[in-house]
Image (cartoon, rainbow, N blue to C red):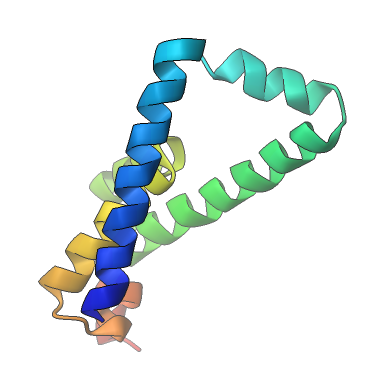
Length: 114
């Protein structure tokens, strides 16, 4: 499993580098661009909608695996806004914390009832 989690961290570093570079050249206000692409009903908008749905799934899973408590819902919001910038290090942390036990990584608090 360690090579997989090393791979997650390589992806995270690449994403952070790319994000910082784009933010420095294009600016940090991505929401008008995101929603303008959706409003045009073209392929960039379709990609943005697909991406937003994946963010919602990631956020829902994050909140659910942590028991849907207020803190879990806040963490889900961070997952939604942060995307892979949140999820890649979070999965790596969970793998370290649970020593690679995939069921516990995926199910969190719900692993006890499964």
